[in-house]
Length: 308
Ligand SMILES: [Mg+2]
Image (cartoon, rainbow, N blue to C red; front, side):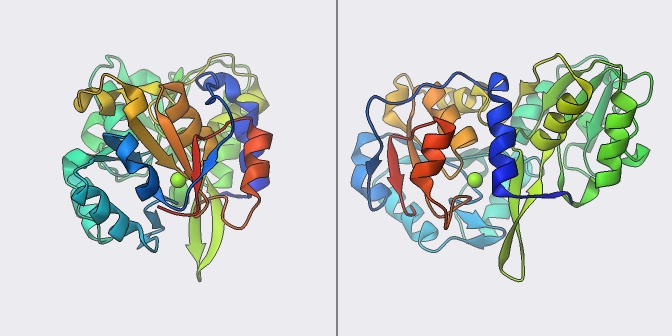
């Protein structure tokens, strides 16, 4: 695990704004609300980020389970939209049930689902190097790709394209250094299964930020001058949001609310596709000045609330 902090996280995101959709802020300032129930009647579909909105690690955030039940009583369509590249449709319901949530497999769309749709279309997997643990839910679809973790991060000669899929424990600082050293004077096509720069994890209840695939790609570009803009399969890329809205037959995205805790993924991406956005204070910005974070990022949510 490569550890970072909130300041590094925000710098990385700010540096890669050219990878993301254009900023499309609401007219006027954010409206503060006490919780989602106050604004619920404006929306038909609620899209929910997972980490920092529903759970912290494997623990549900206080009030989140009750808030989901309340939204169900109001007959709102719900969909978890997560940059999670260890969970696909096949295992999503089970994962959320273990955390006390009653989402069906159809109510969860992860960036791994979007990545898997793309994996089914590629015809020369041997050109691709992938960062993913040795055992992964998409192993069948990753067949033929070079597993960079088992190469200790070194990119073989025959590889000219990189899929950044999973970070965490399986990708070490040494592997990252080897990746960069072996990429010198070479150019790669890049795809981000998980565009996040970092994700919170917990040791003895204390929050830490671990580097995730977006960060590995950011460092590679910074150190080796990669020219290509990576394709994004997760938030803030548009594909994941459009996939969910299409599935629900949404014709007016302003009747959709994206709820998240991260400006650069949840809020930027939701704004960009024309949805309304709600930023929660109980996630990655917990205990920090959220107004300052909004001003620094230049990404403005429609609503701010302490929690769901
Ligand atoms: Mg989050």
